[in-house]
Image (cartoon, rainbow, N blue to C red):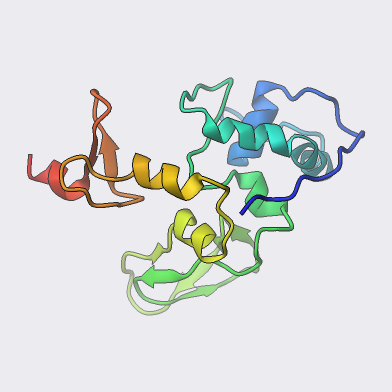
Length: 180
């Protein structure tokens, strides 16, 4: 699915600084807990003004601090926070004791604060990729790129979360890596 473009907002400058771009991708400033913007309203306006540029970075494989990127099958923090195409539904919990959200705020589709029912267990929610796929929110060609980038070269298994790319650029899943 190709997401709709939004109209340009003239309340924000044409260019983002590296730290502002980083903030829109990750939701924080790396060395400083403050926002890279004067207000949440300004950050939101910057997201909508620079949304196309932000998603263009997704295709880039090189990541550095002045040029933050995020991987196919995921979305930047600002998308989860403000984009009207992001469903209000939280990501499904797939493992662990049930959680009770303490707030309605979500962080990347997962309750920002929650209480665990019963004893602590490994809480796991569906991946961003599975959530986006379930809601038909993947971009054109994104599914194919994710499968190519996340399929083990050794056993052929697709795994979004538990893969490693070794120094030679070979994708290896957790099971094959443990067996080495």
